[in-house]
Image (cartoon, rainbow, N blue to C red; front, side):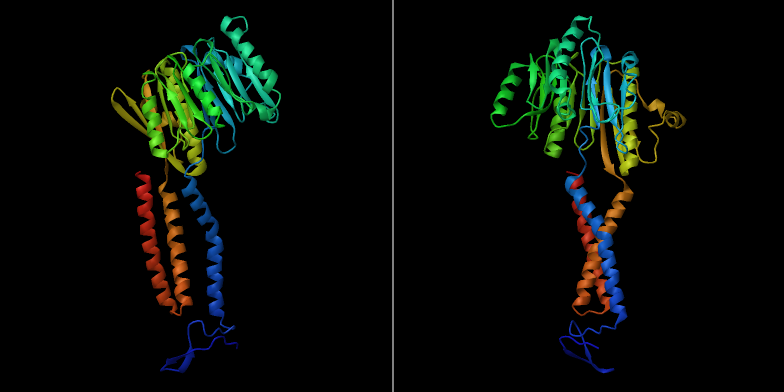
Amino acid sequence: MAVLGKRQCYNRDNGYYYCGNTTTPWNDWGRWVLVGVIAFLVFLLLPIICCCACEETEKKRDTSRDVIFAFGPKGDYFLSTNDPKNNAYTFTVRDSNFKSLKNLPLLHDIYSVAIGAEGGIFLACKSVDHKTPSWTYTGRTGLAWDLMDSRLFDKISSVYGASLEDLQKINLVLGPKGSYFTTSKDGPVYRDIPAQLHEKIKSQALIDVKPRQLSLGQNDSYICLWDDLTISYSVNLSYTGLAEKMQEYIDKEGKPPAFIAMNPYDNYSWFLVDADGQCAWHLQSMDKTAIKGIQEAALSYLQRRAREDSTCFTETTTFNGKERSLRVTPQTYFDTPYAVNVNRLADKFPEPVSRLVAMMREPLIGERGRRNAVVFGCASVNIAVACKIRGMDLRSSLVYGGLAGAITLAGYSLSVTRTSNY
């Protein structure tokens, strides 16, 4: 039997024995079992700890490409939502626009969508083989506005349409009276944008800051999201509630939303997506069928996300001062119209022409429970092992480990609560 660092401690029952780290009998199988269990727990919990730490640091994934919205004239719209599980895109449009898009039933990686003054749709995405670029325009060249749109389409197509990498950098937005703006690999390309925005783009270029996404509205309104995570905007008393909603996200997250669209064909409708997955919109020029379609498509997207990453959402709808809420969890079926009707939820879709909606993502109770178990277990095991190494008996080590785990869990829960309430 090997003995290391001998130190004597008196025991009245059997004389002298060795304590602390002074003796190590190599044939003591019980200690080796304990070491093996501790090692197993460390290797088992380490990936979970890393995942939790990463989740707490990054909070929620960027969803700017998950939901893309474009306004069109006379209540037209294009809403694209991504399935988080297989990265497949579905889109929602008015019935009058569907015929021109019927050959695109499944889309991947939509980069940009814009709708012209006559209803023609610009669409930048991957082609159906998911390898080559697809730069598409669905308008009719005989109309005056569509003729202008066709020229814009040809201009982008000739320079950026042949390469998938170049097309990914296109983010086209159409504004009132023939104005337009798009990002590109060579920098911004635009026409007839507000003078204030033009000067801002020139000044930002001097410090190598470029527009990431832009929206043009009526009355010289604009919103510009820059690639340094800052925002510039002027809504000029138009687009009710938009400035307040943007400022709310900025105050909460410390950065601007991920995607914003103003309706260039009226001065009150807008659609917004925050980086943490929250969505908000104000729709006034659309009929009740279109508004209901947008809400159902958004709920379907949130339902797919809820099942994929075990989160839940609360949708709050405000109309005429009255507030209604819908809860989306992995157990609900908002992506199945039959389930909506069976559960008598259809009457919860109000039929106003003006709507302000917010969707918020929350962790499920089960997710919190798993996280708490990891925190408690790690603290308990570490302290118990430390006590054992210091020479305590197994029972005392376990008691101190459990106490340390409880204290750590209480402190962690308090910090999470404070963060959530911020």
